[in-house]
Image (cartoon, rainbow, N blue to C red; front, top):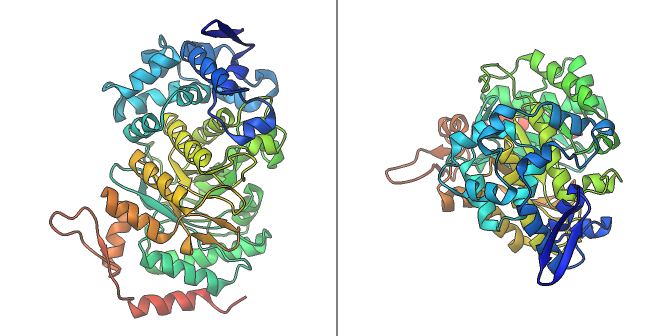
Length: 477
Protein backbone atom coordinates (compact mmCIF):
# COMPACT_ATOMS: atom_id res chain seq x y z
CA UNK A 1 0.00 0.00 0.00
CA UNK A 2 1.20 3.59 -0.59
CA UNK A 3 2.28 5.89 2.24
CA UNK A 4 2.50 9.66 2.13
CA UNK A 5 3.23 12.84 4.04
CA UNK A 6 2.98 16.60 3.40
CA UNK A 7 5.76 19.04 4.19
CA UNK A 8 4.37 22.49 3.60
CA UNK A 9 2.54 22.32 0.30
CA UNK A 10 4.59 19.44 -1.07
CA UNK A 11 3.27 15.91 -0.97
CA UNK A 12 5.66 12.97 -0.67
CA UNK A 13 4.45 9.52 -1.70
CA UNK A 14 6.11 6.16 -0.99
CA UNK A 15 4.84 3.17 -2.91
CA UNK A 16 5.26 0.49 -0.25
CA UNK A 17 6.69 -0.27 3.16
CA UNK A 18 10.05 -1.33 1.72
CA UNK A 19 10.46 2.03 -0.01
CA UNK A 20 9.27 3.95 3.04
CA UNK A 21 11.81 2.23 5.30
CA UNK A 22 14.61 2.91 2.84
CA UNK A 23 13.77 6.59 2.38
CA UNK A 24 13.45 7.08 6.16
CA UNK A 25 16.87 5.57 6.85
CA UNK A 26 19.54 8.06 7.97
CA UNK A 27 22.03 8.80 5.22
CA UNK A 28 24.64 6.18 4.41
CA UNK A 29 26.71 5.45 1.36
CA UNK A 30 25.44 1.91 0.85
CA UNK A 31 21.84 3.02 0.37
CA UNK A 32 23.01 5.65 -2.10
CA UNK A 33 24.97 2.99 -3.97
CA UNK A 34 21.85 0.80 -4.08
CA UNK A 35 19.71 3.69 -5.33
CA UNK A 36 17.21 3.37 -2.45
CA UNK A 37 18.17 6.40 -0.31
CA UNK A 38 16.09 9.55 0.00
CA UNK A 39 16.87 12.17 -2.62
CA UNK A 40 17.52 14.83 0.02
CA UNK A 41 17.08 15.62 3.69
CA UNK A 42 13.52 16.90 3.19
CA UNK A 43 12.36 13.65 1.60
CA UNK A 44 14.06 11.75 4.43
CA UNK A 45 12.19 13.76 7.05
CA UNK A 46 8.90 13.25 5.19
CA UNK A 47 9.52 9.51 5.12
CA UNK A 48 10.38 9.45 8.82
CA UNK A 49 7.20 11.34 9.68
CA UNK A 50 5.12 9.00 7.51
CA UNK A 51 6.85 5.99 9.08
CA UNK A 52 6.05 7.25 12.58
CA UNK A 53 2.33 7.00 11.73
CA UNK A 54 2.50 3.38 10.52
CA UNK A 55 0.86 0.88 12.92
CA UNK A 56 3.22 -1.81 14.15
CA UNK A 57 0.70 -4.44 13.06
CA UNK A 58 1.28 -3.39 9.45
CA UNK A 59 4.63 -5.14 9.51
CA UNK A 60 2.87 -8.47 10.01
CA UNK A 61 0.83 -7.98 6.84
CA UNK A 62 3.30 -6.41 4.40
CA UNK A 63 6.64 -8.16 3.90
CA UNK A 64 9.60 -6.17 2.61
CA UNK A 65 11.03 -9.34 1.02
CA UNK A 66 8.34 -11.63 -0.46
CA UNK A 67 7.29 -14.55 1.71
CA UNK A 68 7.26 -17.10 -1.11
CA UNK A 69 10.86 -16.51 -2.22
CA UNK A 70 12.67 -15.96 1.08
CA UNK A 71 13.08 -18.36 3.99
CA UNK A 72 14.15 -15.54 6.32
CA UNK A 73 10.79 -13.81 5.77
CA UNK A 74 9.04 -17.11 6.43
CA UNK A 75 11.05 -17.58 9.63
CA UNK A 76 10.17 -14.09 10.83
CA UNK A 77 6.44 -14.39 10.20
CA UNK A 78 5.95 -18.08 11.02
CA UNK A 79 7.65 -17.79 14.43
CA UNK A 80 6.08 -14.49 15.45
CA UNK A 81 4.70 -14.62 19.01
CA UNK A 82 1.32 -12.85 18.94
CA UNK A 83 0.85 -13.10 22.70
CA UNK A 84 4.18 -11.39 23.37
CA UNK A 85 3.26 -8.68 20.85
CA UNK A 86 -0.12 -7.98 22.44
CA UNK A 87 1.00 -5.20 24.86
CA UNK A 88 2.11 -2.97 21.95
CA UNK A 89 0.01 -4.24 19.04
CA UNK A 90 -2.15 -1.10 19.08
CA UNK A 91 0.79 1.31 18.76
CA UNK A 92 2.21 3.11 15.76
CA UNK A 93 5.97 3.27 15.19
CA UNK A 94 6.06 6.74 16.74
CA UNK A 95 3.97 5.66 19.73
CA UNK A 96 6.28 2.67 20.18
CA UNK A 97 9.30 4.96 20.38
CA UNK A 98 7.58 6.98 23.08
CA UNK A 99 6.65 3.80 24.95
CA UNK A 100 10.22 2.52 24.79
CA UNK A 101 11.51 5.78 26.26
CA UNK A 102 8.97 5.62 29.10
CA UNK A 103 9.16 3.96 32.49
CA UNK A 104 6.97 0.99 31.48
CA UNK A 105 9.78 -0.27 29.26
CA UNK A 106 12.25 -2.00 31.56
CA UNK A 107 14.41 -5.12 31.48
CA UNK A 108 11.52 -7.40 32.38
CA UNK A 109 8.92 -6.00 29.99
CA UNK A 110 11.41 -5.77 27.12
CA UNK A 111 12.53 -9.37 27.60
CA UNK A 112 8.91 -10.52 27.49
CA UNK A 113 8.20 -8.34 24.44
CA UNK A 114 11.18 -9.46 22.32
CA UNK A 115 9.56 -12.59 20.75
CA UNK A 116 6.65 -10.42 19.61
CA UNK A 117 8.80 -7.97 17.68
CA UNK A 118 9.87 -8.40 14.08
CA UNK A 119 13.14 -6.97 12.75
CA UNK A 120 11.27 -4.58 10.48
CA UNK A 121 9.46 -3.12 13.51
CA UNK A 122 12.67 -2.46 15.42
CA UNK A 123 14.44 -1.15 12.32
CA UNK A 124 11.55 1.25 11.77
CA UNK A 125 11.64 2.68 15.28
CA UNK A 126 15.43 2.98 15.16
CA UNK A 127 15.12 5.25 12.11
CA UNK A 128 13.20 7.86 14.08
CA UNK A 129 15.43 7.69 17.17
CA UNK A 130 18.20 10.09 18.11
CA UNK A 131 21.52 8.61 19.20
CA UNK A 132 20.64 9.19 22.84
CA UNK A 133 17.36 7.31 22.30
CA UNK A 134 19.25 4.35 20.85
CA UNK A 135 21.56 4.37 23.87
CA UNK A 136 18.87 4.76 26.54
CA UNK A 137 16.52 2.11 25.18
CA UNK A 138 19.27 -0.43 24.54
CA UNK A 139 20.61 0.19 28.05
CA UNK A 140 17.28 -1.05 29.41
CA UNK A 141 17.59 -4.37 27.58
CA UNK A 142 19.33 -7.35 29.17
CA UNK A 143 20.14 -10.44 27.14
CA UNK A 144 22.07 -12.98 29.22
CA UNK A 145 23.75 -16.07 27.76
CA UNK A 146 26.04 -18.72 29.21
CA UNK A 147 28.63 -21.31 28.22
CA UNK A 148 31.59 -21.32 30.63
CA UNK A 149 31.12 -17.64 31.43
CA UNK A 150 27.96 -15.61 31.95
CA UNK A 151 27.58 -12.77 29.47
CA UNK A 152 25.23 -9.81 29.34
CA UNK A 153 24.68 -9.23 33.06
CA UNK A 154 24.08 -5.59 34.03
CA UNK A 155 27.25 -3.74 34.94
CA UNK A 156 29.44 -6.15 32.97
CA UNK A 157 31.41 -5.74 29.75
CA UNK A 158 33.07 -8.77 28.15
CA UNK A 159 35.65 -8.97 25.37
CA UNK A 160 36.50 -11.31 22.56
CA UNK A 161 40.24 -11.94 22.65
CA UNK A 162 41.22 -11.95 18.96
CA UNK A 163 44.80 -13.28 18.61
CA UNK A 164 44.90 -13.46 14.81
CA UNK A 165 48.17 -14.03 12.96
CA UNK A 166 48.79 -13.60 9.22
CA UNK A 167 50.39 -17.06 8.91
CA UNK A 168 48.60 -18.83 11.80
CA UNK A 169 51.97 -18.99 13.57
CA UNK A 170 51.32 -20.69 16.91
CA UNK A 171 53.90 -18.70 18.82
CA UNK A 172 52.53 -15.46 17.42
CA UNK A 173 49.01 -16.47 18.40
CA UNK A 174 50.23 -17.48 21.86
CA UNK A 175 51.96 -14.12 22.34
CA UNK A 176 48.74 -12.24 21.52
CA UNK A 177 46.77 -14.61 23.71
CA UNK A 178 49.07 -14.01 26.66
CA UNK A 179 48.95 -10.24 26.10
CA UNK A 180 45.16 -10.28 26.15
CA UNK A 181 44.79 -12.45 29.23
CA UNK A 182 47.21 -10.24 31.16
CA UNK A 183 45.01 -7.25 30.33
CA UNK A 184 41.80 -8.94 31.41
CA UNK A 185 40.52 -9.83 27.93
CA UNK A 186 38.85 -13.02 26.75
CA UNK A 187 35.77 -13.57 28.89
CA UNK A 188 33.36 -13.54 25.91
CA UNK A 189 35.41 -15.88 23.73
CA UNK A 190 38.93 -16.51 22.52
CA UNK A 191 38.28 -16.42 18.79
CA UNK A 192 40.77 -16.81 15.95
CA UNK A 193 40.15 -15.85 12.34
CA UNK A 194 42.33 -18.47 10.61
CA UNK A 195 44.61 -17.33 7.82
CA UNK A 196 44.20 -20.76 6.25
CA UNK A 197 40.71 -22.19 5.99
CA UNK A 198 41.64 -25.86 5.55
CA UNK A 199 40.12 -28.25 8.06
CA UNK A 200 43.39 -29.75 9.44
CA UNK A 201 44.60 -26.24 10.33
CA UNK A 202 41.25 -25.43 11.92
CA UNK A 203 41.52 -28.60 14.03
CA UNK A 204 45.09 -27.69 14.99
CA UNK A 205 44.01 -24.24 16.19
CA UNK A 206 41.07 -25.68 18.11
CA UNK A 207 43.33 -28.10 19.97
CA UNK A 208 45.80 -25.34 20.81
CA UNK A 209 43.05 -23.13 22.28
CA UNK A 210 41.52 -26.04 24.15
CA UNK A 211 44.90 -26.91 25.65
CA UNK A 212 45.32 -23.38 27.01
CA UNK A 213 41.76 -23.15 28.35
CA UNK A 214 41.89 -26.63 29.91
CA UNK A 215 45.39 -26.28 31.38
CA UNK A 216 44.49 -23.10 33.23
CA UNK A 217 40.80 -23.76 33.81
CA UNK A 218 39.91 -20.48 32.10
CA UNK A 219 36.14 -19.90 32.32
CA UNK A 220 35.76 -18.93 28.69
CA UNK A 221 35.07 -20.57 25.35
CA UNK A 222 37.04 -20.90 22.13
CA UNK A 223 36.07 -20.46 18.51
CA UNK A 224 37.85 -20.70 15.18
CA UNK A 225 35.94 -18.46 12.81
CA UNK A 226 35.76 -20.74 9.80
CA UNK A 227 32.81 -21.66 7.60
CA UNK A 228 30.12 -23.70 9.29
CA UNK A 229 30.82 -26.70 7.02
CA UNK A 230 34.45 -26.71 8.14
CA UNK A 231 33.36 -26.70 11.76
CA UNK A 232 31.07 -29.65 11.10
CA UNK A 233 34.01 -31.47 9.53
CA UNK A 234 36.14 -30.62 12.56
CA UNK A 235 33.47 -32.04 14.88
CA UNK A 236 33.43 -35.23 12.83
CA UNK A 237 37.21 -35.46 13.36
CA UNK A 238 36.79 -35.21 17.12
CA UNK A 239 37.99 -31.62 17.47
CA UNK A 240 37.15 -29.78 20.72
CA UNK A 241 34.57 -27.35 19.31
CA UNK A 242 32.96 -25.00 21.81
CA UNK A 243 31.18 -22.53 19.50
CA UNK A 244 30.10 -22.75 15.87
CA UNK A 245 30.81 -19.56 13.95
CA UNK A 246 29.09 -18.25 10.84
CA UNK A 247 28.54 -14.94 9.08
CA UNK A 248 24.84 -14.48 8.35
CA UNK A 249 22.63 -12.06 6.44
CA UNK A 250 19.05 -10.87 6.39
CA UNK A 251 17.84 -12.55 3.19
CA UNK A 252 17.90 -16.09 1.89
CA UNK A 253 19.93 -14.96 -1.12
CA UNK A 254 22.56 -13.34 1.12
CA UNK A 255 22.93 -16.53 3.12
CA UNK A 256 23.13 -18.55 -0.08
CA UNK A 257 26.06 -16.36 -1.13
CA UNK A 258 27.71 -17.40 2.15
CA UNK A 259 27.08 -21.04 1.29
CA UNK A 260 24.46 -21.76 3.92
CA UNK A 261 20.79 -21.96 4.76
CA UNK A 262 18.74 -22.28 7.92
CA UNK A 263 18.76 -26.07 7.84
CA UNK A 264 22.57 -26.14 7.78
CA UNK A 265 22.74 -23.80 10.78
CA UNK A 266 20.33 -26.07 12.65
CA UNK A 267 22.47 -29.11 11.83
CA UNK A 268 25.57 -27.34 13.13
CA UNK A 269 23.86 -26.24 16.33
CA UNK A 270 22.69 -29.76 17.08
CA UNK A 271 26.18 -31.12 16.42
CA UNK A 272 27.76 -28.63 18.83
CA UNK A 273 25.15 -29.24 21.52
CA UNK A 274 25.84 -32.98 21.30
CA UNK A 275 29.44 -32.38 22.47
CA UNK A 276 28.17 -31.04 25.83
CA UNK A 277 31.27 -28.93 26.44
CA UNK A 278 29.70 -26.13 28.48
CA UNK A 279 29.78 -25.96 32.27
CA UNK A 280 26.82 -23.58 32.74
CA UNK A 281 23.13 -23.90 31.95
CA UNK A 282 21.45 -21.56 29.47
CA UNK A 283 18.15 -19.76 30.08
CA UNK A 284 16.24 -22.90 29.09
CA UNK A 285 18.11 -24.97 31.66
CA UNK A 286 20.06 -26.76 28.93
CA UNK A 287 23.80 -27.35 29.14
CA UNK A 288 25.54 -26.12 25.99
CA UNK A 289 22.42 -24.51 24.53
CA UNK A 290 24.19 -21.26 23.59
CA UNK A 291 26.69 -22.72 21.11
CA UNK A 292 26.50 -20.35 18.13
CA UNK A 293 28.58 -17.27 17.35
CA UNK A 294 27.25 -15.11 14.51
CA UNK A 295 28.73 -12.08 12.80
CA UNK A 296 26.87 -9.58 10.65
CA UNK A 297 27.43 -6.24 8.96
CA UNK A 298 25.39 -3.57 7.20
CA UNK A 299 25.97 -3.86 3.47
CA UNK A 300 26.45 -7.61 3.21
CA UNK A 301 23.19 -8.10 1.30
CA UNK A 302 23.97 -5.33 -1.18
CA UNK A 303 27.50 -6.64 -1.75
CA UNK A 304 25.94 -10.00 -2.65
CA UNK A 305 23.30 -8.35 -4.89
CA UNK A 306 20.73 -9.91 -2.57
CA UNK A 307 19.03 -6.86 -1.06
CA UNK A 308 15.68 -6.94 -2.96
CA UNK A 309 15.56 -3.14 -3.04
CA UNK A 310 15.70 -2.84 0.75
CA UNK A 311 17.91 -0.51 2.75
CA UNK A 312 20.92 -2.05 4.43
CA UNK A 313 19.93 -1.30 8.01
CA UNK A 314 16.55 -3.05 7.73
CA UNK A 315 18.24 -6.11 6.25
CA UNK A 316 20.82 -6.03 9.03
CA UNK A 317 18.01 -6.20 11.57
CA UNK A 318 16.57 -9.19 9.68
CA UNK A 319 19.88 -10.98 10.17
CA UNK A 320 19.25 -10.74 13.92
CA UNK A 321 16.01 -12.67 13.47
CA UNK A 322 18.09 -15.47 11.96
CA UNK A 323 20.49 -15.28 14.90
CA UNK A 324 17.70 -15.19 17.49
CA UNK A 325 16.23 -18.43 16.19
CA UNK A 326 19.41 -20.37 17.02
CA UNK A 327 19.89 -18.98 20.57
CA UNK A 328 23.52 -17.90 20.15
CA UNK A 329 26.02 -17.11 22.87
CA UNK A 330 27.30 -14.12 20.90
CA UNK A 331 26.25 -11.95 17.97
CA UNK A 332 28.73 -9.41 16.67
CA UNK A 333 28.05 -6.58 14.26
CA UNK A 334 31.38 -5.92 12.54
CA UNK A 335 30.17 -2.44 11.92
CA UNK A 336 32.84 -0.73 9.82
CA UNK A 337 34.55 -3.76 8.30
CA UNK A 338 32.84 -3.97 4.91
CA UNK A 339 34.14 -0.52 3.96
CA UNK A 340 33.24 3.05 3.00
CA UNK A 341 31.11 1.89 0.06
CA UNK A 342 28.49 1.03 2.70
CA UNK A 343 29.37 3.24 5.69
CA UNK A 344 31.39 6.14 4.38
CA UNK A 345 32.78 7.86 7.46
CA UNK A 346 32.99 7.89 11.22
CA UNK A 347 29.58 9.54 11.58
CA UNK A 348 27.85 6.83 9.54
CA UNK A 349 29.75 4.05 11.32
CA UNK A 350 28.79 5.42 14.74
CA UNK A 351 25.10 5.68 13.84
CA UNK A 352 25.12 2.17 12.36
CA UNK A 353 26.82 0.65 15.40
CA UNK A 354 24.26 2.12 17.78
CA UNK A 355 21.38 1.10 15.49
CA UNK A 356 22.64 -2.47 15.24
CA UNK A 357 23.09 -2.83 18.98
CA UNK A 358 19.65 -1.30 19.62
CA UNK A 359 17.85 -3.53 17.12
CA UNK A 360 19.59 -6.70 18.26
CA UNK A 361 18.89 -6.08 21.92
CA UNK A 362 15.19 -5.29 21.31
CA UNK A 363 14.90 -8.59 19.43
CA UNK A 364 16.43 -10.47 22.37
CA UNK A 365 19.84 -11.04 20.76
CA UNK A 366 23.10 -10.97 22.80
CA UNK A 367 24.72 -8.13 20.87
CA UNK A 368 28.34 -7.14 20.79
CA UNK A 369 30.14 -4.85 18.39
CA UNK A 370 33.44 -4.87 16.58
CA UNK A 371 34.03 -1.12 16.72
CA UNK A 372 36.16 -0.91 13.63
CA UNK A 373 37.03 0.73 10.34
CA UNK A 374 39.05 -0.06 7.26
CA UNK A 375 42.07 2.01 6.38
CA UNK A 376 40.40 3.56 3.32
CA UNK A 377 37.35 4.83 5.24
CA UNK A 378 36.95 8.47 6.29
CA UNK A 379 37.30 7.50 9.95
CA UNK A 380 39.94 7.40 12.63
CA UNK A 381 40.58 6.34 16.21
CA UNK A 382 38.77 9.35 17.66
CA UNK A 383 35.57 8.25 15.88
CA UNK A 384 35.95 4.76 17.31
CA UNK A 385 36.59 6.06 20.83
CA UNK A 386 33.32 8.00 20.64
CA UNK A 387 31.37 4.97 19.44
CA UNK A 388 33.06 2.74 22.02
CA UNK A 389 32.00 4.99 24.90
CA UNK A 390 28.44 5.28 23.58
CA UNK A 391 28.14 1.51 23.20
CA UNK A 392 29.54 1.02 26.69
CA UNK A 393 26.86 3.35 28.03
CA UNK A 394 24.24 1.48 25.98
CA UNK A 395 25.10 -1.82 27.67
CA UNK A 396 26.88 -3.59 24.83
CA UNK A 397 27.52 -7.23 25.81
CA UNK A 398 31.07 -7.38 24.44
CA UNK A 399 33.66 -5.68 22.25
CA UNK A 400 36.85 -6.88 20.56
CA UNK A 401 40.30 -7.15 22.07
CA UNK A 402 42.99 -6.92 19.38
CA UNK A 403 46.69 -6.29 20.14
CA UNK A 404 47.29 -2.58 19.65
CA UNK A 405 43.87 -2.21 17.95
CA UNK A 406 45.50 -3.28 14.66
CA UNK A 407 44.56 -6.66 13.22
CA UNK A 408 47.59 -7.49 11.10
CA UNK A 409 45.91 -10.52 9.53
CA UNK A 410 42.56 -8.97 8.51
CA UNK A 411 44.17 -5.56 7.93
CA UNK A 412 41.66 -3.35 9.71
CA UNK A 413 41.50 -1.22 12.85
CA UNK A 414 39.51 -2.45 15.84
CA UNK A 415 39.61 -2.00 19.63
CA UNK A 416 42.46 -3.03 21.89
CA UNK A 417 42.79 -4.81 25.22
CA UNK A 418 43.45 -1.39 26.76
CA UNK A 419 40.25 0.05 25.29
CA UNK A 420 38.13 -2.44 27.22
CA UNK A 421 39.92 -1.47 30.41
CA UNK A 422 39.16 2.19 29.72
CA UNK A 423 35.45 1.38 29.39
CA UNK A 424 35.49 -0.70 32.55
CA UNK A 425 37.19 2.05 34.54
CA UNK A 426 35.29 5.04 33.15
CA UNK A 427 31.84 3.42 33.26
CA UNK A 428 32.34 1.21 36.31
CA UNK A 429 31.93 -2.01 34.34
CA UNK A 430 33.39 -5.40 35.21
CA UNK A 431 34.36 -8.60 33.44
CA UNK A 432 32.13 -11.68 33.43
CA UNK A 433 31.88 -12.92 37.03
CA UNK A 434 33.51 -16.31 36.44
CA UNK A 435 36.37 -14.74 34.50
CA UNK A 436 36.80 -12.02 37.10
CA UNK A 437 37.24 -14.67 39.80
CA UNK A 438 39.73 -16.54 37.62
CA UNK A 439 41.86 -13.42 37.10
CA UNK A 440 42.13 -13.05 40.86
CA UNK A 441 42.90 -16.74 41.36
CA UNK A 442 45.73 -16.59 38.81
CA UNK A 443 47.24 -13.49 40.35
CA UNK A 444 46.47 -11.43 37.24
CA UNK A 445 44.18 -9.04 39.12
CA UNK A 446 43.38 -8.00 42.65
CA UNK A 447 39.88 -7.87 44.07
CA UNK A 448 38.05 -4.56 44.06
CA UNK A 449 38.62 -2.61 47.23
CA UNK A 450 36.08 -0.54 49.19
CA UNK A 451 34.43 1.94 46.87
CA UNK A 452 36.15 0.51 43.79
CA UNK A 453 33.84 -0.63 40.98
CA UNK A 454 36.18 -3.23 39.49
CA UNK A 455 39.38 -5.21 39.84
CA UNK A 456 42.83 -3.79 39.39
CA UNK A 457 45.14 -5.64 37.03
CA UNK A 458 48.52 -6.64 38.42
CA UNK A 459 51.69 -5.34 36.81
CA UNK A 460 53.85 -8.43 37.29
CA UNK A 461 53.61 -11.52 35.10
CA UNK A 462 53.41 -14.83 36.97
CA UNK A 463 56.42 -16.67 35.50
CA UNK A 464 54.81 -20.12 35.46
CA UNK A 465 51.86 -18.73 33.55
CA UNK A 466 54.11 -17.29 30.84
CA UNK A 467 56.25 -20.43 30.53
CA UNK A 468 53.29 -22.76 30.23
CA UNK A 469 51.67 -20.63 27.52
CA UNK A 470 54.90 -20.82 25.53
CA UNK A 471 55.06 -24.61 25.94
CA UNK A 472 51.46 -25.01 24.84
CA UNK A 473 52.16 -22.93 21.74
CA UNK A 474 54.77 -25.44 20.58
CA UNK A 475 57.25 -24.75 17.80
CA UNK A 476 56.62 -22.02 15.28
CA UNK A 477 54.86 -23.30 12.12
